[in-house]
Image (cartoon, rainbow, N blue to C red; front, side, top):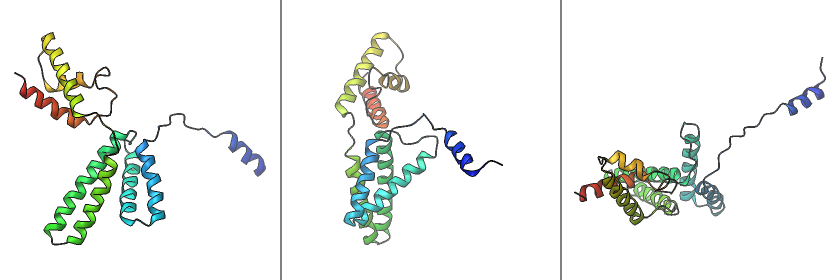
Length: 180
C-alpha cells in the first residue's frame, strides 16, 4: 500500500491547468465592483439588477456564446432593458403602478450601464458605409446588403471597432435606399 502522504504529493504534481483563458470584459468587472458597493449601501434595486445581470452572464458562459466583450454585455443589457420595458407596460395595463415603478427604476439602472459602453458614432458608420458603397459602385459589382455588410465589417473598415451590428445594418439599408 502507498502511504497517504505520498499519494497526496503525487496528486499535487499531476494537476493540469488550462492555457486557454479569456479576458473578462471591463463592464463585467465594473458590475461586480458596483455590486459590492450596492451591498454596502443597501441599495436593493441596484443590487437585484446587478445580480440578475451576473446570473445572465454566468448562464451565457455555459453556452457556446460566452460573453467576452463589452459589446456582448451591451447586447445583454439592452435585451434585459427591453424585457423590463415590456413587463412595466404589462404592470401598467394591469393597474399595478408599484411594480411598474420598480421596473422603471431597473430600466434606468440598466441604461446607466449601457451608456457607459463607448461605441462608434452614427456619423462614422455612415461615412464608412458610404465609402464602401462608392468603392463597390466603382468596381461595378452588384450591390446587395449582405455583400455591403461583409465589406463594412472587414478588418480595414470597421472590423474590430465596438459597433452594434444591427445599427450598421439599419444604416446600410437606409443609405442603399437613398442612393440610386
